[in-house]
Length: 239
Image: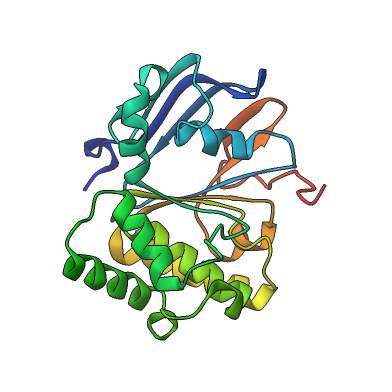
């Protein structure tokens, strides 16, 4: 399908992004389409995570326009925010699993909280997402019994539960060694290609977006703009 024919799943127009009270990015224009793999890169403190928080309606949008999975952010009613978040899968650097319950119960908790009632459906969906991330044999383990890479795979399984249109991953490989990080990138790439799920990934790891190509949005000097193919990204991203 031509890009012109597709509706973006996420769209920002002249949007100012805030971090607390302070504006951190001015005039953001961004369109993310079904099936996109988009990196948001930049030094620490340039607004990468603030963009993510705005997408999930954690940070308010006070200036400009944004639409995420059909919801208009500048005037989204409080009661609609949980429904918006169900259409997004979010993966964090520190996994954010509930440490007092098994893998299966972590996933069951999310399904119950998002309105799933039928036990058979719940069990079937848990099995599907664990299979998708290669963790079907770990469902009865507690998080502390898993390696960092395994915990991140469970976090990705959790993000898939409600078949999201977009997965937002905030430094998902930040706490992982290079080999484990590579496995996580292959997994996200496969989900993107097989399911057509758009992936938005915040990172400052240049190797990732050089090895796994996608669109690259660069946060710098209170702006976030798309990198043109020929440009090299002039950033010391590790500072």
